Length: 263
Ligand code: G1P
Image 1 (cartoon, protein in one colour):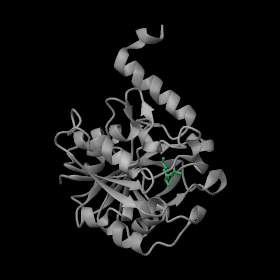
Image 2 (image 1 turned 120 degrees about the vertical axis):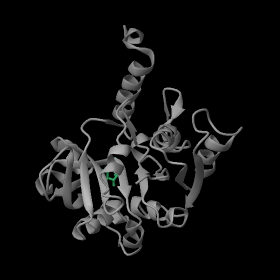
Image 3 (image 1 turned 30 degrees about the horizontal axis):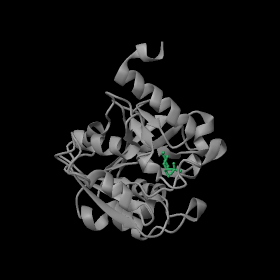
């Protein structure tokens, strides 16, 4: 089954990246020579998406939209249409994704958080799509987390062993911490969702932090038996923190310019 649409939530104000994000939206912070969100759109295009629905906030959304529209399409992005949608209130990641519902309709879709940039040569979207049982289940990209990250990421509830990288999941918990974590497999910002997630999100009440959490909708997909995971290892870089941004710049810089640059 081919997936032709991606949803990219980019409305976050980036509190972990202050003061850089006092004016500039988090999605437009630069990694080497382009904003974080451009990496996500490029990745979606490589996986065959023809449309990228970018969810932006009221204050800074026009800047994100302009980045993609000014002077025509960006090089390499000629075959993907970037369509902004405004999230008027910051009600959480789940709410941001649900704002794309009318653009996506009844299609399965990729979801990419632009806080996470894929390592060069480690694309995962095609693998996630191939595990979707022809659009019957949603597929989560996972990484084994060390203790400190169990309180920073959503963590899934396994329901089978890992076979060829995939496992069945019974659900997920948002930022459980070490004691409550149901496993070490964390949600790392790449998902394939069936459109069923939109009707679930409509009924999802605010969870952790008073926000409508995407992870709570993932929990419901697990309860319904239509959730799988794909263990992608260390393929993603987290640019949502200053340390992560530094590591990502170094790793992408190594790939772009070679180790000589740092000698
Ligand atoms: C969000 C999700 C969380 C996921 C994380 C990945 O959290 O809610 O489940 O593990 O992204 O980066 P945030 O980073 O927005 O707090």
